Amino acid sequence: MRRWTVRRLAHGWAIPLGYARRDQMRSRVLRLICPLCQKEDQTEWEREAVREKARDIRRKARQAPRTSARRP
Image (tube, rainbow, N blue to C red):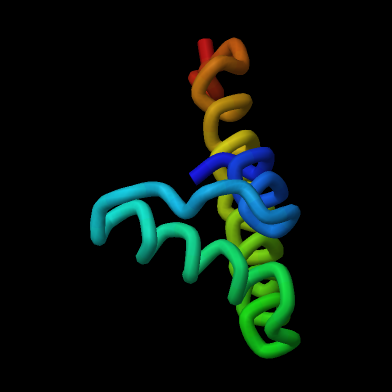
């Protein structure tokens, strides 16, 4: 669920129909207000940043020109 939808719902707009949408809304609101959920999200973002950095390093190593260490 998009952030704007959650904001509209918080300001009194109609609740979306369907179980899946209500579940998404509940999850999004909990992530916004619950300190434990926010901490979990922060640690997940940090882990993802570390993974992305490692991927970038591997990608650059693959793209770097390879020099052979052969002796003539």
